Image (cartoon, rainbow, N blue to C red; front, side, top):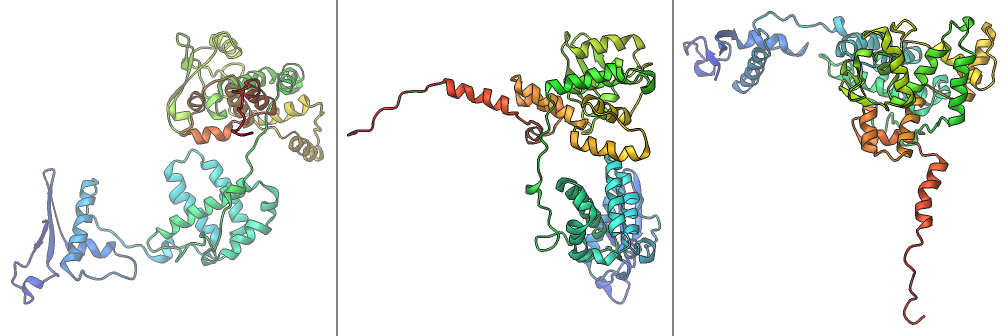
Length: 417
């Protein structure tokens, strides 16, 4: 035991003396000595600080004392207790800002940009409310059902925003002192009906793919569009053949291509799940032709980058224009035409991520095992991969033809019939 009594039993209280208890720990050649109250009192909750009152309580603080030493922290360093006015925000907007600065950003989330976007939505609709109003589910339920945001977005998007608020409140409940007394997210408060979310089943047909590729090489390969068409063509082919996420694909460099095994390495630093993986490619396919052509730019050049091999993270405007061209729609360049263009794009309803879905579905239709597809996509579970695989009516019919063509064993008549 690392607890000693500094007074050596000379106090009037004798063995019941708690005032002179002392921590005395030897760890890796260094000795740590400190009175129990000097260590424990600054670490107690604000407003509840007092000397220890029993040996059992002293032993509890002893475990924390040893834990800090093993965590390479010196427990003897003075610790100033935080005041409630230093940490407690006044409204929801201030609380969400504190959550982003003190929790989300230090965590190094790869989806930090998406989280900040959802936080901005919450601040716009709930930011002016006092902080304790979040404990009541009424304001959150009104945002969930009656806000303009709830009407404009899909249920899945709304649920992701509410999940961000729930995570922020759980962080607030864990603070010292806590920002909230209770959470509104429970079966009789704010509920998120995930079963009602509709799964996206947009497929890219071969004819539509050809329209996109032809428009890229013909309509977009002009000075007016800065000759961006061939780059879009290569990226569309890469997304369909490699089934990569957009961020992963754009960071592929020539030095990651292994021509002996015909594989492309995806380093964990660029992957969403932080896991390294290797994606095989057909040595006689479309991607191989792109890789061969881009290999001349040098090992550090980006395969799906600019014409000179530089990193080019975004081509969103060109992608929007290409979708319009491919569907026979002439984009309107004016400011008023921008709203009209967005309406046409909503009707087309084709996203870049749908190319990744389509590539996985084509692999499944060609008979590739779903576990192989899981490795291609970089998913942690088969269930996640199954959400990606949308079977078309034609593929469903071909699959059932196996059963239709099998006449099966003839049925025998029942006895006595």
